Length: 300
Length: 300
Image 1 (cartoon, rainbow over the protein chains, first blue to last red):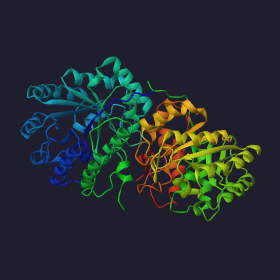
Image 2: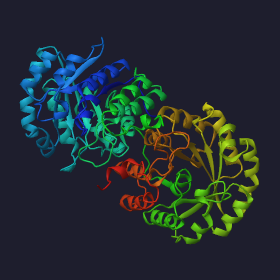
Image 3: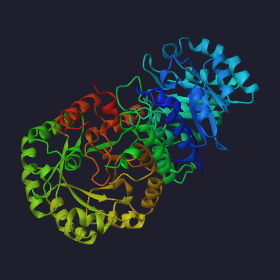
Image 4: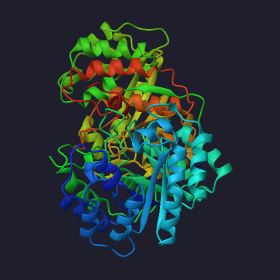
């Protein structure tokens, strides 16, 4: 029989990864309400925004204001994506608990996103990670396109594990393995994690699945069976996938919580309060959010 | 590690269960094109229609014409739902390979659907099943609301297994266990099948999951791990759920095929040809079909 843990840790990436991939810019006040609503719903890890250059990702050009506006709850870890030293300066000023650094497995994808090769990104992040750790922050590394790349197709597991190992070696406290375009299938995830276990300390890994082709929760199950207990998801399934024309990107936090709660796996999250937070931000996006659970309890 | 079989059998229920739950009536010619398209895509089991009284389910009032219009492919099993002796007469005339009988676990749900209690439905089906078997047909039984009921809430596993055992005892060659309103979670399915194995020959079971809350494929995985190899699904996710306001009902066949193929589990189905068939029928429904894979490769 499949292994299920007693509890999982949910990393809410909607305010950052989600909103970054929505066409519509959400007002700062609505972002603050979203983050506070998520914390009130029981989320204990929230990626709030990204301290990138405002012209790079206009949807997240108010990261400082969002951090200034949220009400910190004890026990909640508020994090932000940081691309460089200037970003880290801003993150430290904003009082983040954790930073994330973003790279991936293929040069094509990483170049398209952060205009440098994978090698160069790792070289650049090493001193950044060291400085963040010195400042007492936690550091999360993102390995995007770990299962497939919109430019290069399927990705060799060995190459993905090399990048993961580099991030762990430079001190990342956690590495999030991303199926950025939602192509991973359960069998592929099982093989991936099987190889990972031979090379890495997989207790450092989080899994980040997209539901583009409906496989996100099935992939979560496989990962649970392999001992992974940290999962990324986005409120309501915020964030389309820029490389796939369909509506669905990130695994919806509601879908994850519903599936886990019914299976006796604790998340600490109140699904009704979570839906309220998701509906609140959806009003600003001009589209229904793609999460299945949220859709199933839509009011007509 | 989770168990995956070499192959699964996909039972396409879109033309019957799917179209029955769509508000819009699809023209007979489009239904014929759908069934023929599904067979061309490699589906080997297709539930084509329902021989009910035409006023009961107007969406399927052309079952005889659909059967007369399709082009039979060797190796494809064409089935139909049959509620009574008159229905069986029509099914035999139409030359079906298999009939299905529909009941469920709770009296409330079964009464709402076929206006009799569960017990009465079983009593009525016994001679019908015997006659169909005598005529050389295969017989499938449906156990709806096996995990939860829109009227009665959660359903006791023992009661669901009683109904399943009755259908097997009366000669059903297969029993499809339905999560009709899409509330089942992976842990619940695991417990259900664990109890089922103690009481029944589970090689007779098929699983019928709805994706209303995003759990369908995760539930399929759990069922595979428990040794189940027959799964119901509907092209494009045809068929909203009449008891949930959201868009999504049946597990989309494309999502199932994508997840299985990538996992090394054979289905015999060409996903591109399947998408063509789904898009063909979607044109008549006035809504996008909810299947994730189909949506991800939508043309703009």
